[in-house]
Image (cartoon, rainbow, N blue to C red; front, side):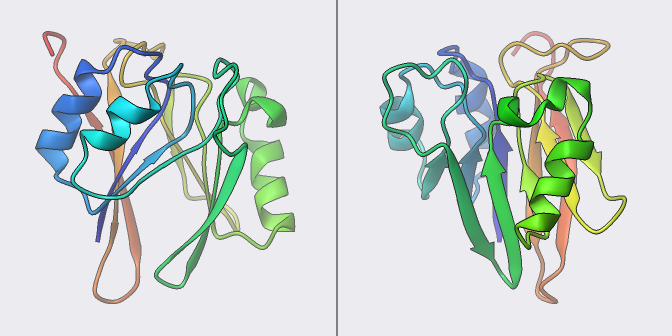
Length: 162
């Protein structure tokens, strides 16, 4: 199973559409800040799309958080702003562990992270629209569940002209 994990599109959706074409996922997980683009993001995918509420998703009925089962793995999806992720991911990993989660997917910082340390895997795909890391390349994560029920994560980048 191939899962496209994105965040922080902020109504600038062309890079998301390009990532969909590149990855051709079985599932899309959006970690928030769609700013009213829920319909466009969902309808453009040929697979299920799960989206959580971000701090800029005003007047939205999106869920604040999601708990998903992917294979045998418990995956928690949240935007992250309520867990002080701008200061690091220690709090969100601690909360994920307390909830019995194996993986936490979050956004908000616009900086990609794959943190495999400790008892919980923490993944931030960065922003596919407004990146803030060195080099400022739009990023997303591909999460794959293999035939042995193991999860694999890779941060991927769109070129600057995308």
